[in-house]
Amino acid sequence: MRSPIFIKKKNEVTGTVAHLPSSKSLSNRALILNALSGNQSVVSNLSSARDTQLMRKLVGSSEHVIDVMDAGTTMRFLTAYFAVTGKNKTMTGTERMKQRPIGLLVDALRTLGAEIRYLEKEGFPSIEIISFNGQKSNQVSIPGNISSQYISALMMIAPALPEGLQIHLEGKIGSRPYIEMTAALMRQFGASVSWQDQTIHIPRSSFQKTSYRVEPDWSAASYWFGFTALAEKAEIILPDVAEFALQGDKAIIEIMDKLGVQSEFKNGDLRLTKKEHLPHLEWNFTDSPDLAQTVLPVCVAKGITGSFTGLESLRIKETDRIAALQNELGKIGGRLEEAGSTWNVFPGNVKAISSVTIDTYHDHRMAMGLAPLAALLEVQINDPEVVNKSYPDFWNDMKGVGFDIQEN
Image (cartoon, rainbow, N blue to C red; front, side, top):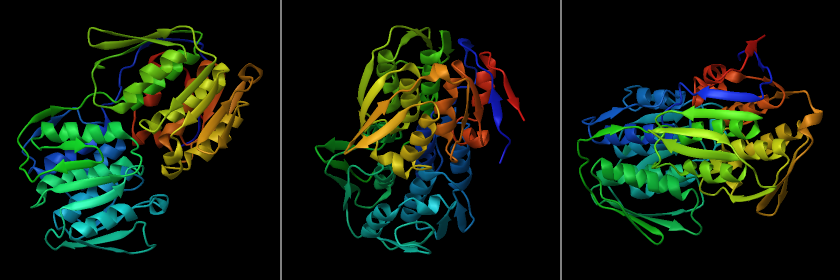
């Protein structure tokens, strides 16, 4: 574990973000689709995130034991990929990964013809993929409100199945933009995908050779909206950020417009400046749960009350993000209270606090979502290397816009 870092308060934030990563979500999908197509395509501008570099290494690995560490996307996508390609693999990861459910995906893959067994706790990693015994069904049913990564994993392997696949989504559908992202990228690689009502139809097809450049990551971009919202004065340039993107986390523009951030696309860049904010925010995070750790701290720090839905999936991420946010927002006087399926945010008096120590819970988004507090007070971040999971140059980019960051 790396020593804590200490960030000095800086209430004016200006400059260009030099190392904004490309999309981890798109990179990981592109690597799977390219592997399924025989690595005939050219995929450029891959994310520098640890998760993507791990996916790049493991998708072509000849090793029997595949250790995904704490990368949930890598676990789910590779489980489906290795299963349908009939590779005998043991899938494992960190202790936290072994607490993250995978049973629904395993059940679906078994329905299709995969032989998979649990090596430890039923429904959770570690697992052994033994073989694929020919397609037994061309239909699977799966709850629509579970992690969209299960659904995306099944979608991407569908064209390689002899009979294709129909995926029936049961009940409410969460994280819809991530499913649509997968479909759009699959089409770019030559697959046919149609989505009618609750059913996704994917016939057997051969992936086509393509050239694909990964777009910048909107989850990573969201943190700079946080800095803009909290700083007294701000002008931040995010280079090479397209106005039209596949990622659902582009919703940060609409959210932060209400929280005091003006967005302007110009000459291929995105310029962030300050504007007036609303006193209260209501938002459904079902389609963009990864934005919660950016948005909720901004509300607390700016004195904005909030009422939010769609946060259920935060409990099964890298950490229990609901509990982690409750703990860390409490340090700056805020409260996050659960009322049925709604979470209410109550701000505190940040001006009465001169410094805060943030724990990160082995979660990259806890570090980066709360780092913008440095526009208001001195901040210590424990275990700062967690950002390597998705945005390795985050601390360097903070320095690049003028923050003084010291290591103990």
